[in-house]
Image 1 (cartoon, helix red, strand yellow):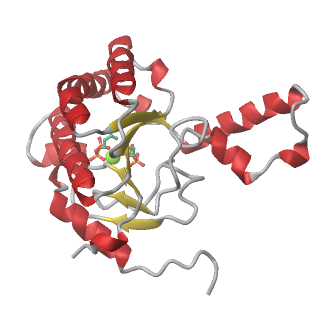
Image 2 (image 1 turned 180 degrees about the horizontal axis):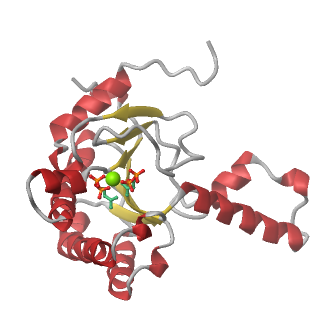
Length: 240
Ligand code: IPE
Ligand code: IPE
Ligand code: MG
């Protein structure tokens, strides 16, 4: 099982399969998203227990706006409910919440709940829980390039000053924002074998673990299996 001495510092998860889970049960898609929130809550708790320092979950992509209005607004409603009802518990567990993505363009009640959570957990020192919301890897890189372009325009830097560190800093995960190291492990559930625009820059050397389990059925046991799989890998980073 998992080796507690070799835990990844940062685990990122593409929580996929809520819709299929609901369909299998003859339920509306939103019932799947609701069950997905419950699964997420357990994984947050379990990450804390395992001593993981950073957990990032992909909750809503920049492409997910293509879905029906009913589904999109339903997802954000569930999110507000989760964030509001769990704030006390997150605080008790010393969890620091951060958002990756352009959450300001979400419905205003969601923005309000999120900002309250960010503010009230800011000084916590336990698990950092990053929620990727309205997040897209390409969008994030584009924004970083833009920010650097502005510095260039202002004459603060020259083109040769642009470095990987400078780009990293400007990403949502960068020192100027959520300040998270690159994930050692990216897990995707539901049997899909792609990144779907998640952590494109940060995932350059992440180990990818795919689980066939649909997200609402992803238990702490499945989570430990994925971590054990990661621990069985040999990471080479281009060396030999
Ligand atoms: C993941 O589940 C949650 C979000 C993308 C918001 P899906 O809603 O993508 O579920 P499937 O892939 O249709 O089963
Ligand atoms: C990725 O899942 C986004 C999230 C889990 C939030 P999708 O279901 O949106 O991805 P595709 O469409 O299958 O690539
Ligand atoms: Mg999906």
